Length: 227
Image (cartoon, rainbow, N blue to C red; front, side, top):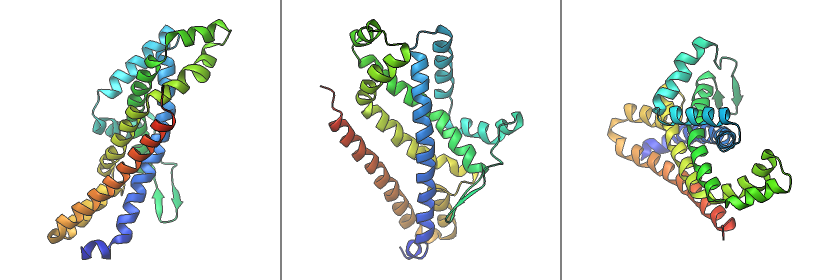
């Protein structure tokens, strides 16, 4: 345990990167997922098909391949994050962080889309028809009638998606982002005799973060309970 005490600042910094990666990619995934579900249930056939194809392709592709595409293939077609060089306190957000967070956001948005689509299907069809009958356009029907109820009904699957995203941030270690798993690997390599203590501390860190997300989801589910 002494190795954790001696490197406690390193552990905190590692989880700060993990939380930053989770919050940034989670926010973008929620926005993209909402746009995708609006396209998927919308009246324009081309947009419905485009959304369905995107969701099917990305959701069925392993996350590691998506991240490798962002880090290796995307720069070859002009998509790169070399401009990203932000320093906040002791945290450095570079092109590696940018590629990881966009890759995680694109991948997670497909699961957000499907979670919200299950919520949209739970909204009675008559409500959308009534909204159209009083003259609301498609955008108004979605934003004022369907999506608010769909989000309430989708809290449990959305929480599961966010928990999966939190754990998926560990894959970013492959690209040199100094998040929790990356730091854990470095500490275990340098302190082989203390591996169990290091594993347990980092596992507890992830468990605490997951429990926080679960608590927020339970709070929202009770507050927005669908009768």
